[in-house]
Length: 345
Image (cartoon, rainbow, N blue to C red; front, side, top):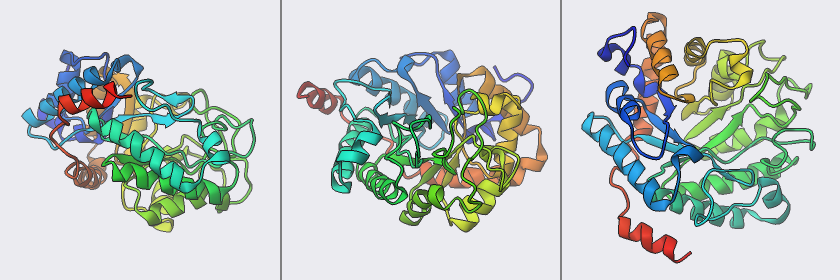
């Protein structure tokens, strides 16, 4: 699988990637990603998830592969936001849409809910949740309308802070998304590149939740595939202005910057995925998300390993990722505890 590059060369950039895998058990391709490429993380989808015991076994096996490779614990992530985006259903806690929570819940209730969801994820070995959503959705025309806590930036910030606290209490890494905010858009970045509509060059409304999350110490932020004309002609995911100037310098964020899926239409319509990976790293991203299994991740690693101009950015990204990964628990929960918890639900 290590096409076009020596194993050692590719594993030097492997920790910069979070990859998808094919099914509910480890197959040879997944094993190569973890053992040989030494990816930094694995993202799980419905195709990987059957029931709590199977998920526990899968995450245990993935972490064993990382251990055998001499690597720190893997980031094992899932989108468990709530509403239309929650990969795991019953017997896991079902989460209302963020918009419903924004209308009916207070910060204490959101924090408690996030803590419960986080504890369930941690029980089955998932240590990163790609949530909460910090986008301030203005109108129902925004694709994130149901996924947003609402149009009030102060309320979005307060509820997002509560969710971040709850996940953290459960020892699950929260990921604040999607910087610098998709709430003023009407196009779906899964299909095409949206452009910011708010004329405010400071993006005061959209950045308030991210500013407060950064001040709170959120450990990871996910980028949006969004063009902000006042900042740059490039999508934020590929923009040093967005990631370096705004997120790092102006907002003071010091944690891990993670891209949204580099295969989404907003990026892929103008860039080959391996090239987008290099551009995102150069712009300031640390963790490069490619959700399709295996082949494209290897291609992107080959692209990065050949570009000496990226070596400084790669070193800084690996340092931030290593610091985050070494905070993770290595040992899985006891399977008997997993069975007992979900049998009671």
